[in-house]
Image 1: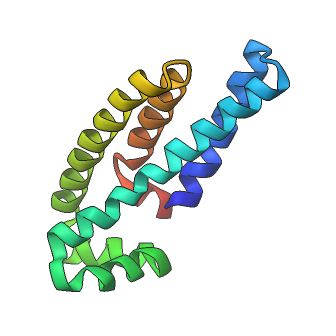
Image 2 (image 1 turned 135 degrees about the horizontal axis):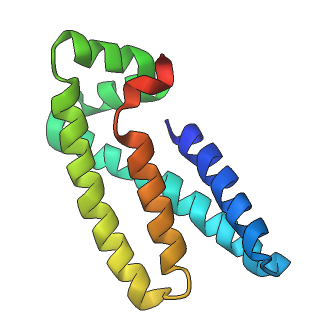
Length: 133
């Protein structure tokens, strides 16, 4: 649910920039980097789909985009939701650690923003079923 990650990151980073009274350009950079890193990390779902589903990957990617609730229900029916959620979270953690490490070297002034965005993302991803309750 990338739109959900974008919306939550936008709200949280806007709130944080207003609390700390950043200058406009610095606050805007803070918000943009937080939203982009917190949302685009979901691109590793493509990698997960190809590693897990091989030839059926595009089918699951398409269903995840067009009918995420249906995909979650399909995995629940086959008792595979916890399995896929856990593996996806592990891949997220590995990918996020790698990207965060790179950000510490290349973008040290924004690495905290990226780290916060990743933690927010992981919290939202813990159990995707709550989005549809």
